[in-house]
Length: 255
Image (cartoon, rainbow, N blue to C red; front, side, top):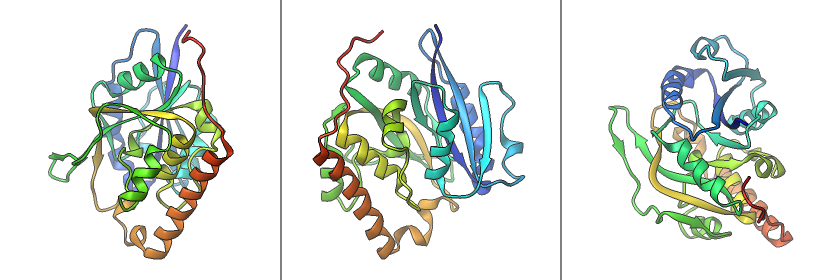
């Protein structure tokens, strides 16, 4: 029986030109026997500017909708996801060779692991890459560790939410990405870690493109008032989940 992982991509008109690079990185992934991927691309909006960049491939589906930001686009895309796992790939980023296979190997080996992340490299405008100092060691990320680190380090997580691969049932149980204008992926990561152990792969799994149009590069992203509100609600959600005692555990054997 063929098993599937769904790759979810939010895209808006300015980032559409990067879709061919994302597509090439996905097309180059080699999965274990019996596995296949599907790519769900969701436009944040309904323009005529994205569709020309969407590849013609039966494994690729494209949808549009009213604008609500990347978190809303990714969450809406879950309506079309058929995979047991959901992998994030933003339109302007690229997977490294073997990234999907490494995610699947971890999640299939241990059902107590709800999600995986990996090392990310900044992809700079000149084509060079730059890493981040202080990446954790390869291995499990214990429950609550992300929130603790995030609070101690000026609201920066030790693992990158853009590299996330997660069990689809866990993702939908948490309601998808947070309804925030930014940091919606960090909010999801905090919630996931409140209820489940995760995993960090020390091998680079993502090239994170730095360019002038990305949301995190805009002035509004660092507005003190909005940043304080975003971090407050993301923290409150994670703490509430932990206090309620809900836990994602599955000790049944892998089929």
